[in-house]
Length: 166
Length: 272
Image (cartoon, rainbow over all chains, first blue to last red):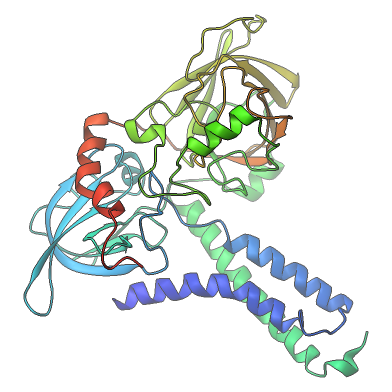
């Protein structure tokens, strides 16, 4: 997993853990009576939970086939970029350390959403070397979804393509 | 106050305050980032700007809410028929999510109303004589709300987006009543059904230049034993945003299904 995806994942996990940590810090659950400050802090914790619970962007048909808790970043060579509705698709050859090539199929957001985020149908081309962050299929198949708040593509020249703006 | 039981409370409260401040910085930075991506809007200025009278025109985006891609709120108990329909619906979202369900949109069937409103995709209100139009980016469909004083049809043939009439309850609240919906649609991405007896009341209350409060009431006596009052949701104006063409193209969806959706849904050896 790349450094950037580790950082992104760490942020998501901290977003979930912060409110829980805050409640613990306030003394909830340890039998201590709540003074006013603590009630205030508990309220702030609840607000914090609301801030962080809007959830990730989802695929057209839902994300239940994908492992949202364990996003990965793949480095590989684009074999095709399909500008289709309702899902764009990125096909990628990924070579592992043993030299074995796996052919991945990755869905992303619709052309309209990608357009709003600055993409065009020419943003990716066969032969491009990219790093793509995605949530993989739970069943181990070489397919995934790059379109959540973590989804992004880093091109070989360092440009970053995202898809969060609706 | 009984701090004798917890001598570390003061330290923890201070630490909690620091953590909350950090979270607030994160939240504000995300909000700023969202505002600067393709939108030239000044929220503080717009909150104090004059609210347009009897005017909802513009591009709007439903904000995330407790109902996710659906009405939210307390769903009433279902009738036996409604429960049977609900049980047979296999959604891709929510607590009953399954990877390869039977959501009608997987066939590119029309999403219908009100479900399409809860997809986090922009739509545009525009008024023309006798009608208010809703132009949805999703599926690139439009819905017309008649404002010429006509009544709802008494025995309408069902349609995917229903028959709707609207009126201004006051200068800032537009109320829509509708009926005549096709019962093949789902009310939300989580599979709640509706029947051809569905009636909706929508209230769009414009509270400032950039904000509409939206309240939906769902009456469907074939499906629910009572009125379903949805959670209030917020619509935010999207200045300088154009409605783009986003379709569900059956041939492209079928190709995608074979290459990605079905392989992702097949049981596998490495399944977690």
